[in-house]
Amino acid sequence: MDTREFAKGTLLIVDDVPNNLKMLFTYLRDRDFKIRIAQDGEDALEQIAYSKPDLVLLDVMMPKLDGFEVCRRLKANPETADIPVIFMTALTDTVDKVQGFEIGAVDYLTKPVQQEEVLARISAHLSLSKMKKLLEQQIQMREQDNQALEQRNRDLEAYAKIVARDLKKPLIRLSGLTKILLKDLSVSVENPEHLKFVHEIEQARRDMVGTIDDLLLLAEVRTQGGTMEELNMSEIIQRVKVRLLYLIDKYQGKLQISPTFPKVWGYAPWIEKIWENFFINALKNGGRPPRLEIGATSDGGGFVKLWIKDNGPALNAEQRRMMFSALDMDQVQEGLGMSIVQRIVEQYGGRAGVESEPAIGNTFYFILPEVLDSEHKL
Image (cartoon, rainbow, N blue to C red; front, top):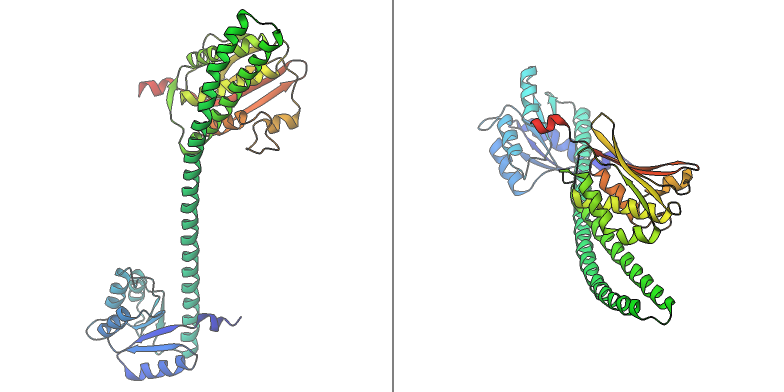
């Protein structure tokens, strides 16, 4: 493509010397530019206010308003600040040139100007100006797309919360019905299998509620920053244990919980969810019966590794890699739970993972920032 064709545009030539105007007018018009002329600074500003040119060739030494003042006014006005200005001057003092660049000129031409040089400078700066405008338009379009995407995400999150709420209503109702059935069947049951079926219905209901809660938590983690508060980990783990007593009894799990934990930073409801996912995974996939050890280790560098060890079959390398993978229906190993764990700990600059030893079991862990003594003193 001919770069000169790409650079064509409307030029305003401002000079108080008619011969200079005539020479530039004729030369540049013959190169297919649209040419407008002004013989002083005030006329130039009036013309620009009426119709913006693509570039201004501006003489420095003029009566009434000199070129420097015209340029200052152009750059001070947001409507005209983006118009490239090339000074034409007989001044050779470096200070004058620096002043011109400081007030916003893009280039200088020294009088008497050379026609080929004028054409080259104009073409180059028009090309740059057009590319800059194109880039700004692309950025603006991208920002608009991002805003639209953010709005769609907000709409989807609001919709997800409404759907989750509506889904939980019948499940809560179902909980009441299963409790009544379990109570009646435990007193007089002709077929023990019926009692087992009701237990399975109740377990399925719990799983469904857990999945809905996971979806809500995932939306919350995506839209909120990691709230920082000092956590009492022993209390958090105890709450999770009480909440999962039905599952611990079902699998006859044996728990060994450390009596003390280092204090860490985090957000209690989110950290409870991490432990809940770890407990459920360890109970379901641990040995028979599952023997679980829960504890924590400070690395001495400002972070704490919190872990749960099970006695289940050791995971292979691929299983360990996929355990905390991004949300992908074909890849996630344990539903939403472990993916949510990773999302949460990343909010605090930590990470989650699993270590496995054959014939021993697996250690699931997550890392959080430690509350240091110096932080208490502040």
